[in-house]
Amino acid sequence: MTPRIPPRPREVLQLLCCGYSNQEIGAKMCISQGTVKTHLRGLMNLFEAEDRTHLAVMAFKRGVVSLDQVEPKPNVER
Image (tube, rainbow, N blue to C red):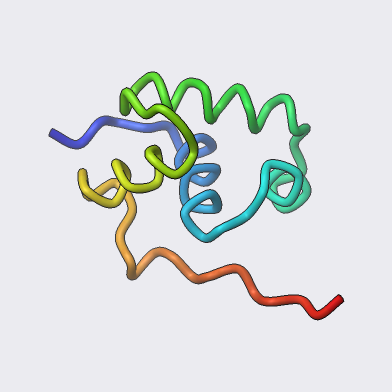
């Protein structure tokens, strides 16, 4: 069964699946890192995930996020 996820936490989940850090997600969505963490905690509880990687795997397995929706984070040369 696919859980119903509100738009903002779903966007956090999609960015997580693209490889963005909490700081990058916050900057991209114009929200604080604390808010990002709150969304991730709620999502981890919903999916019974142990960590960020497990959350991403569960999101793909349950069809909440698909490869069509995920565009990898661009590589930045430092």
